[in-house]
Image 1: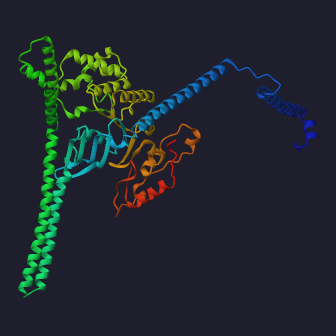
Image 2: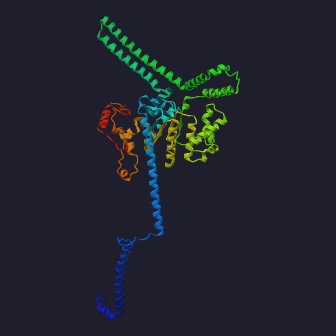
Image 3: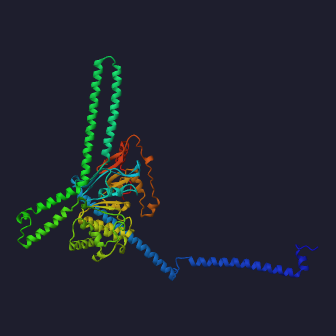
Length: 553
């Protein structure tokens, strides 16, 4: 048998197979050689294409590559320009704020408090039929807002910022605490007074039981000694009367406070209107006496003066102290009536206050539209015909038409995009300088708050945890929650953003309030922190060491 592995035998017996194998071998050798040569040629071609020797001219890019390069350059230029504009805007706002602070340094001691919030609590009842709980939206918050400043209120969603604003403007009735506007109490709650009466009676009852037990014990010990027994009875009778007198004094005081609070809540606007009417009558007293209360109008000038007097008197009768403060709401579309024209929306406050002169209303509406950057022809349009930023301007115009001294801006830019946010902030800043407004600015954006506000209050779960001037708060944050908020602010610099460390706030781990309860303590002049005595010492030592957070840059 011939072996297929013996090549000579195969070639002798099967000449066709021998030729076939030789051809296959040659093809394989040629294929391998071609692959090696092709690979080397491709490597040289690629190297030649992308090599840039010093003595050779650069390769001309194609049209598509040129277009891509131009687009990239334009995008980088636009981003750099936008970033520079934002930096310039923020720097201008900072310089304005610093200039205002410098102007007011000498007046700090005599600043006029336009708004004062004292121990404000706002609870919402949950449940019913005797089984209910309280949602403590705001718990024991106190602060003052000075005339002409921008006071920032920041914190996470649900911490009670909007609830404070709505309670100040009397959309909510306070559960407890007081709200003063221009020295007049405009809101007062009575729950804490009622609780004080309740627990005073409970304490009195427990104390009397304690005296009864002590008296019985001493009488039993003095058994048979009539004089001693009478002495013990007289002693404890005196103690009982003393405790009863103390409790009665507390109950009488709290009842008077409740009556006064209810009276102020019900009559604050009536009292204010009466004062305004008296001022108008005093202003025109000589004229009224001369014209027999307007019955003897001899000239056209007298008639014009009497018409002016009647308009002012009518406005005074409808005056409300809360007209001096207005609110800009967070959602511009939800806060305006879609069935009313812009003219009707803006002028609604005037009509409520007794102004019905159409020519005067038209003039005032056009004036307000001009102030907020809209046109007079917009007055006859409806809200759905405007963009979000324009609708927010309508809300601002509605607030300004009442000539307020205080504006509560409840996150006025959170529903808008970045470019529109800058426009609204600039508008508020200009109006603040032009009209001398005081603004309570509620927001989430700490960067905006830093450059727009003079002082900042930080809230957490219904409590005010830190209050300080803007620069002081960013440079020396003390409360752990404030540090956590500031650590969440993104940075424009990529290297800084890459190395940014996020601080997480855990109240249970950060504080031990089991025995020593926290209060709002002034660590430095104007810098308040919610802490106990142990934390107060730590914060004072930290500031004394030259601590600087680096967030103030």
